[in-house]
Length: 294
Image (cartoon, rainbow, N blue to C red; front, side, top):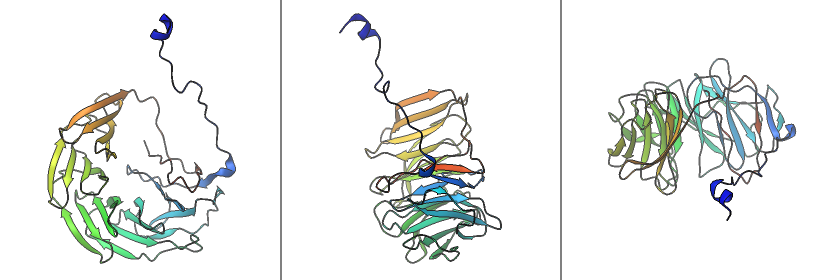
């Protein structure tokens, strides 16, 4: 190698170029919900994409077949059983036609979507789960056990439900002194990690009802942070520094130490507008780009 090649680091992406998605491959003219709760407003599986939308007189979300791209008619039927705005949605990993929703009306509802999608508004859930005293901002299915759903609300309570019977299996109380920003199951579903407004990231064994590890001030900024388990068991978090710089961090949950922290100045904000265009993906790719309100 020459002297200059040793000094200049070559980017692996210098010859990679993006290509704009064509209009007919997008979901266009969707009136995305403007509720300020910090969660993803969409969820996807191999058959459908669900998007929380603006609704009068309660909460609603669209469920579209992945191949139904283009301009979406404003009269397209919605899932509309909640009496308050919908804050979070999550598809069941074991059944592509089952989706859960959490709402400001303090309830969790589980819905069965018809084989070919909605042809009329759906207002009758399969089951209504009631146990929270304040709005429910997080719903997430167990990754391996069927009919097991977790919900977290602004009452600082985490409930693990048996959806088949409609009963609460586990109540995790007195673990979080403030609002819970995010909850994520580990790969095998034996643990959960949480991010809380008190700036702590906790690892919890729900069956024992015990906190097995926690990190104080994972991110020192006042804005919401999020934490997820990775496949290797480490925990990945996003948050902000005291100076409102966006931070990414990787943690070892055993020693609760930082493996890596990246910080960068926040140069722009992403905002949810009243009409949003989504790029469509192949049905084989079970993912979606989920924007969040800044």
